[in-house]
Image (cartoon, rainbow, N blue to C red; front, side, top):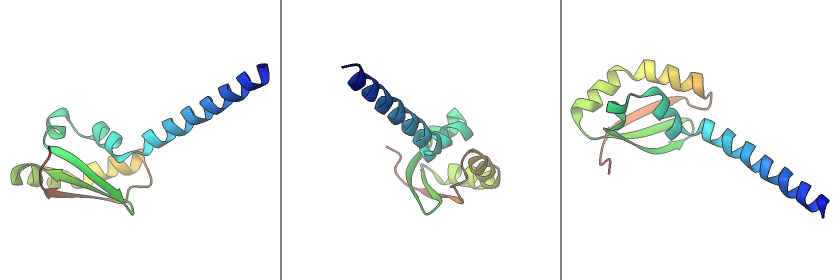
Amino acid sequence: MDAVRDIVKNVMQELETKKTALSRDDPNVLLKKVLTKKELGHIKFNYFRKGVVNVSVDSSTWLYHLNLQKKVLLDKLIKESGSIKDIRFRIGDIE
């Protein structure tokens, strides 16, 4: 019975390790690290595909603001996760 308990414990530890690794590279989590709370209120993460993070922005004003900061934001994202190559902003619903 102890062997089963040890196996279950080991499996749970491995799953937790994988979950932590995945959340560390999750673009949505990374955006929360590099953007301010005010900026986060005006964006919505859409998708991450082929190294490109796509984000919807609620207005042209915020689109302009974030595009001005794109280089700095991208450098921070790349530093956090090497799998990110670009970030693209577009106007859209953020609901």
